[in-house]
Amino acid sequence: MDLASIGGIVIALVAILGAMMMEGGSIAQITQLTAAIIVIGGTIGAISVQFPLNVLLASAKGILGVFLHKDHDEEAVLKQLVEFANKARKSGIVSLDGDLASVHDPFLKQGLMLAVDGTESGEVRKILQLEIDNKSEMDEKVPQVLESAGAFAPTVGIIGAVLGLIQVMQHLDNIDEVGKGIAVAFVATIYGVALANLFCLPAAGKLKIRHKQHVMMQEMMLEGVISILEGLNPRMIETKLKHSSRTPERRRRRSDGQEEARGTRQP
Image (cartoon, rainbow, N blue to C red):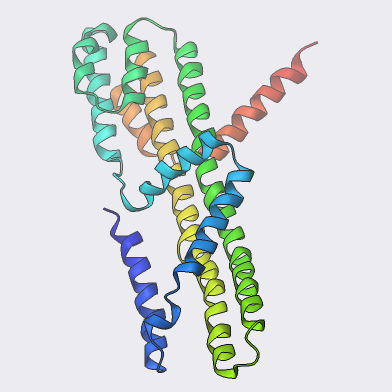
């Protein structure tokens, strides 16, 4: 359980609702099922028009990652890679075949399997980098869905408020009902703004951070496997991976720059 996500939402709701009650309000005043249906249903409909179905299904699973998440133990992965490097240096890369069952990360396991099977380091790098890029392409769309929902929700809330005001206008002969109706109409706006700013946009930001951390971890695994395959000194591998603070974006820009440089050297 991600206590920061759960605690953040609880703190926000307690602060907002508590302040409202301190001013004499009540939770019943902002409890409107119709407004919730308009805002949630309208927002889901809007993002369904914008994104393909497979992206929406992936985002539905990704949203769970805001509350349920298991961080990678970078130190444990680094230690495991160094142990593999020591064993490969003493007994050969094929000796790691018996250790594959102890590798739980599918990405690292795939890289080690390629190395054990005798794949050249250049091909291993291409395969693993393609795996990272393909997975990243989908993972980057999940925050985009939440950001779009955060943009649509307040507008849909305004639509709900206008619909409520239309109903109010039909009862202008009863001033008491008009006052209550206006209050109810603006509940939809509250729902829209709250959904966007208390969940959708913050959740999108958290998923972006986690995506970057995940890519950096995979980049470290990739470099570790390549280093083992090339027979580098285990101490050098440990130092190389431990001090590899370059972000995936900078790595990708460096790679793109190298490709462009190769292209300019061709006749």
